[in-house]
Amino acid sequence: MTSRIIGTGSYTPAQIVTNDDLAKIVDTSDEWITGRTGIRERRIATEENTSHMAVEAARRALENAGMKPEELDLILVGTTSADHCFPSVACEVQGALGAVHASAFDISAACSGFLFAMNALQAFIQARMYRTGLVIGVDCLSKLVDWNDRSTCVLFGDGAGAAVIRAEETGIRHTVMKSDGAKWQVLSCISRTNGNFLNNKDPKLGYLYMDGQEVFKFAVKKVPECIHEVLDESQTEIESIKYFVLHQANYRIVESVAKRLKQPMSKFPMNMERYGNTSAATVPILLDELNREGKLESGDRIVLSGFGAGLTWGATLLEW
Ligand code: COA
Image 1 (tube, helix red, strand yellow):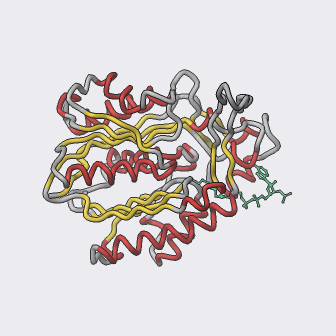
Image 2: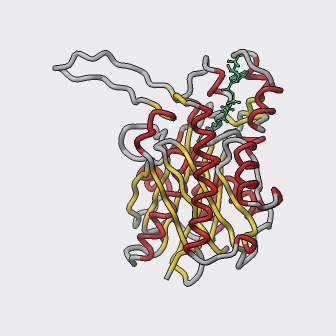
Image 3: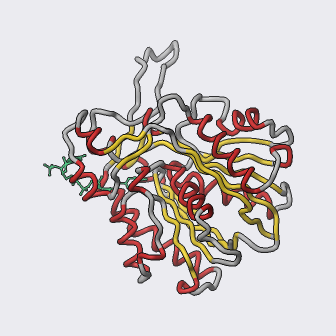
């Protein structure tokens, strides 16, 4: 018994912000951003919040799967930008959808969030606790970045992606998830702290902080490693993989991973040009685009891989 993706959906805000738009608020240029990252524009939430984007992506995934919200047993949301400390985004989604039979909670693994949530759902299904679940990767990092910091604000965008997953005989074949908490400082966002009546702490607003070069080095080393691991442990030839759906942070990272894996770039679809890095949402948004463009056929072998703050990273091998 394993589980299979039976429907996908995604949502990105309507507001497009181009590199030229950003050059009006920080000292940057389209040439610098495109050359270093491959990003040309991103979507930024104006009316939408995190749960709104998650609900829209979920509705589209359910429609794509031909399923009703009442049929869901579990809703897991990978996010690090929930609208509230509590309740979770997952509970807000459950309420908005009317998924009255589902349990719901969030998983915090930053840009690896969708992958970690999907693997957790797979484990619940394999343990026969649940049969049908919804997994969402959503982030609204526009509310966490410092819009005066050109080294980070140009990289991110907002969005959500979702997948409906059901117990079946074929589908997810193997998963690998890794963490290195000793390196948490290289990519972090310190939460707002109010202090308490004893420590007199002033409230502080946390912005996203990133050591870009450390993250770059980490990604190009660990992503190929975990992809090799997932393939070796499942005794799968790398040549049999149709697509490597990687976290969309930077085209140079994707190119470097392809080179290290000795695989052609045609196996690495990309869309960061249009959305930037949407954190937990990049992998499911890209997967949804491939699905809706008819590029995924039954039996195709696909590797999903994410990496991000924590540090966290991982890979999942599945058959479509
Ligand atoms: N526009 C123009 N110049 C910029 C800039 C911007 N938006 N951001 C930084 N710069 C400048 C720096 O100030 C620096 O100037 P200096 O040489 O005068 O000091 C120069 O560009 C080079 O900066 P550096 O940080 O060395 O660039 P880089 O080649 O490492 O590229 C990243 C920066 C962020 C694109 C790159 O490190 C990266 O992609 N890292 C991984 C990030 C990532 O994937 N994060 C998400 C993980 S989930």
